[in-house]
Image (cartoon, rainbow, N blue to C red; front, side, top):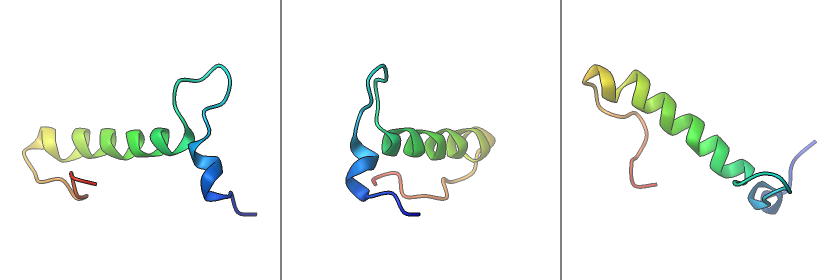
Length: 48
């Protein structure tokens, strides 16, 4: 079962952000905690 791309950008009632934002937030937080705070370079492009 695949999720339509547009569905990732729908903000559901009671929430402030869409699913894609939450996924990106998880990746960015992981990068910050595991790489940046240990003095290493990010493993994903910081510019998108």
